[in-house]
Length: 123
Image 1 (cartoon, rainbow, N blue to C red):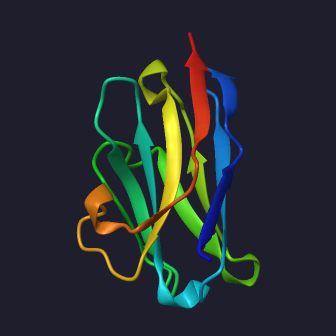
Image 2 (cartoon, rainbow, N blue to C red; image 1 turned 60 degrees about the vertical axis):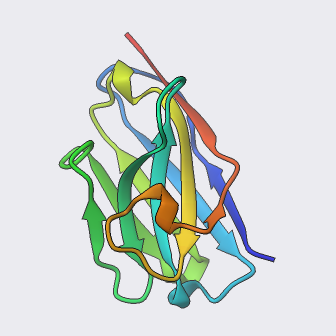
């Protein structure tokens, strides 16, 4: 059974940083790409960054480029999202998801989803 478990969310002040983790199990980690997404109340789910666990090359959407970084640890089957200079607009539920292939880091390209972790940025 494919499982993705996010952790590391919480309350942070404006300008602060958080690192989210996505622990994967139930599938061969190297065969999948992992993406990070977020959804704020009343908004559509938004892609942030995606990474191929095979070659480790991340891609980012314009929403968070230069502030967020995706990395991976194959030995731990874990993908991370480092978030810096957080702003109130970054408040959302953050999800990781898995797919065998992706092209644009869009939510509809991903099949398996974690339960999400809340990030709240206070001003």
